[in-house]
Length: 63
Image 1: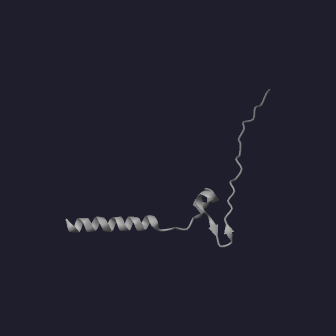
Image 2: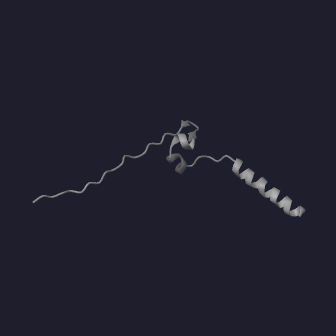
């Protein structure tokens, strides 16, 4: 019983440590948006722009 409680307590401590760690923002996360990801570099905030949307249209040929 005592070992079960100590194992559960250790598991909660490890999970809390994993949740509390701060990781650097990766390129994939920064691509979602600077404000949402909090992307900052040593020279300032990273600016990410989305590419323009391409519209495909079908050509209609009238004979």
